[in-house]
Image (tube, rainbow, N blue to C red; front, side, top):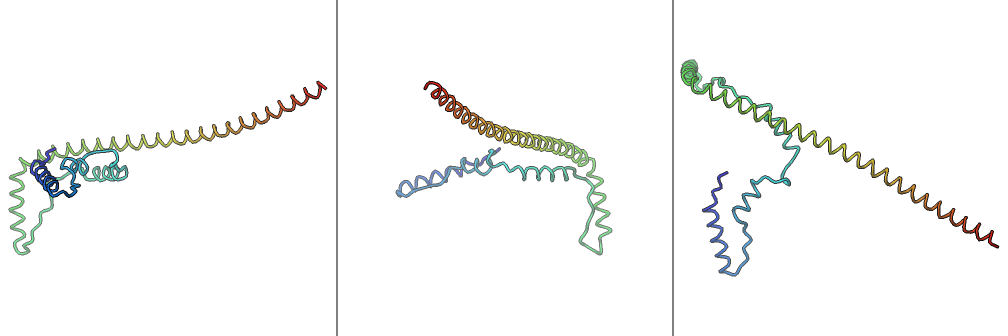
Amino acid sequence: MIKNNAGIQQFLDAAHEETDKSGKQCDLITFNEFWDEKYGASEKNFDRGAFLNNVGSLQAVNQITYYQELTSYKKGIAPVVFFFKRIIRKINAFLFLPLVAAQNTFNLSVSSFAGHVRNYINREEDTRMVFLKREKELEDKIALQDAQIRELKKAVDELRETVDTLKGGNVR
């Protein structure tokens, strides 16, 4: 990725120096900080919904065609314009048809890759949801067992009191 930051960074440095001389506060970020914030890839900027929509769009329009509909805005000479456009298109076909085919192959590969990434994200999300559901079930089970343990401890304490009172009653 080419960052044309030499001139911009010099400008920002000059602005920092100017504000330092004047004694005022300069809160300008550096060009690299701006670039990383604006164009850098980070997890917090990932939008799953937007990504999935973009993959859908990519897969819908991943192929291009060399032969487009010929048009002319000159109503009177449209047949002549069409004739010359067809000739120009046939003359250039040997050059552009292989390029279009190569681009279509590349687009199909990227589209396929993006589809696999989309499927991976969906599968991971489904797995995460299953784990969250299972975690909730286990937490509920633990809470129920904790409540049962408290009840049993209470019953044990009551039984101990009863045993102690009975032992105390027998001792008399």
